[in-house]
Image (cartoon, rainbow, N blue to C red; front, side, top):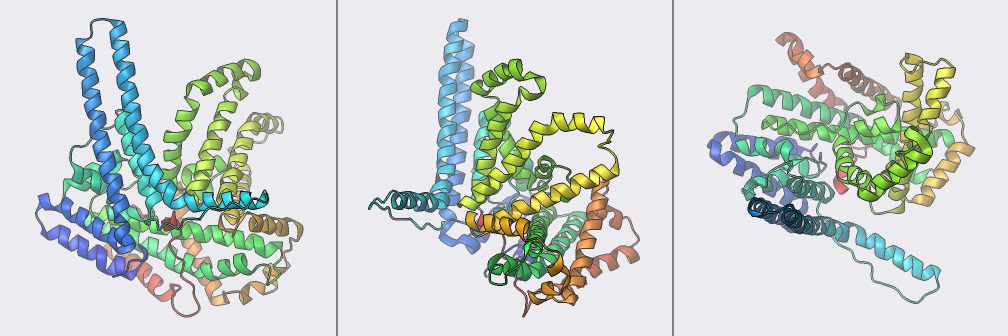
Length: 535
């Protein structure tokens, strides 16, 4: 059995039901081991022998966390026996250095494996490029490693576990099976979300029986995720692929380039959020609450807000493990203190924040891929967020003088549209074939812009017909309405569940039928591969 994505027949019709059935029929104590076995089998299906890297990560964080726990106990015992403040200070310093060394080893093992497998080809390729530019005859062999699917996700989970044990946010778990299940739970292996130990570990290992509500609500989430991916993302993929790969051959103008950027952004959201719906729904069936990864991102009024709503678990990981440590470091505190004296309260903290944002967005870009276009993507958002922070005090002053109310709907709509366009340009960079390609597309967009190609039928000749466009409008409208309901703080699933059976079941059945009848599969379509599974 080959599982290519979570939204596949192999997963939805075979693997997941089989796992649920086996989980149901075994005793409570055996249920965690059913999930663990299913997770390892799933990983073998998607990456085969590369499972060894996952096992190394699991074993490393398990042993190093126990080492941290031992050091903490030694510190407590030594402090209790210490006779003076100086002695206690020396104990804390020495023990703290040992604990920090353990954390560094954990980071080096897990991020080191990720770096070697994912980034060494990029590094050596650029070293060879440097040699050619300097007319040197030197050259290094570019390695070609196979990396397991989802390594960027579980590696960050491993680092968070070690760090949180070090900071005493969680206790080191002596049960290696529980640690292994936290790291390998099959719904989150491919495309996240990036979970913390405190999010899922206890629920995963509790072995609670399945409940009708969890099964039905989980199934609803699965169906809606399949709707997003199969009906919308897969239908958009053929036109997006044509625009991005053949824009020069077709001599597309800036209007079609912009349309491609918008459609790719929609495609990316529908594929990724649709997959996350399936992931969260799968976890919900087993009674496990997996963190949300999206919160209506296209209602954002700024780039900063957008990244608080898009890929939430990645953003919070960078915030907690890169942004805060950088801004709270001694050099940054000193910089902020001096900057406040010279720049005032509004701008004083900004130099340290901008440095931290640079680190975050460099890592964010590289996390998405080993290529200059991904670094460019990260720097694009770094510049936008930094500029937004710098001009915020000035914009508040200007809006005040113009008597423009930020809370009124015209200004909100303007901010939402502006943010969405900036995001679409960023995703165009993200999806380009390289930094030169992204710059070329940007140039065409701004120097050869025209609405003509959007209305002269050109769009119908590059992958979609009128039938497809109508289905897209209807499907996207449904997702948009669901987003509005959520934005108002209501749950569409609970609203539907509260309806009489003769109302809610036709809705459930209608959703499944819509996917089956109007899904983009078969001849003429180009199903999209899991985008984030390669990260």
